[in-house]
Length: 108
Length: 119
Image 1: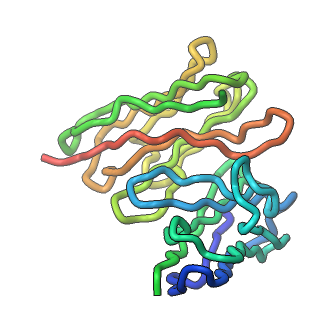
Image 2 (image 1 turned 90 degrees about the vertical axis):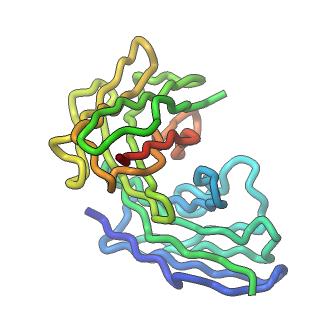
Image 3 (image 1 turned 180 degrees about the horizontal axis):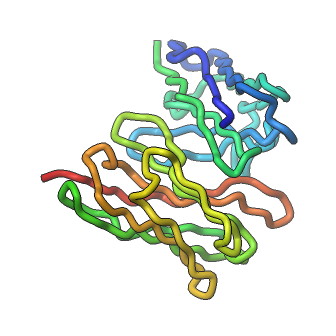
């Protein structure tokens, strides 16, 4: 099983600031089979990034995914009010999908 | 458009059973493997089960093995999760998902169905 570890657990920032979220895998994720999601309270996770760096349909360019192997990063260049939420990374390299524990981005 | 819609959630007593369903549309269901993921209230995402395109390969998380059964009906474009011997810790929103390939390939999820196990 590929274990994903996200850091930090919580990020306290102001609107307009830059957010940098990390996701580290316990073993190499081949073909960069990694996704990022944003989840707001009471809603299903929404796909932001797939294949480590491809933005999903309708996702603004302030979201950028990068990384390969075991280290991946989600960068939000300028936080908008709707970006204060919980973010999860997910690997789909294996049929047994696994998820990080989440990073909460809160308003400072 | 490509869509997954779950149904069948509800309130069930500990030890009881429930079957949740997922209706797929907008893509060739039989060409795609399917998974169930759940999220307990206030908690993170947990993968529950996987079924291959034909149904010949199935995996379960240790937390549900022996109690849950995943199945699919390709003719009806539907995925199922039969949940038996339910426990309070099975209380969660249950999502169906797949790795959709229609040109580009990426995960897609339904909106989820809530299962509450309580006396």
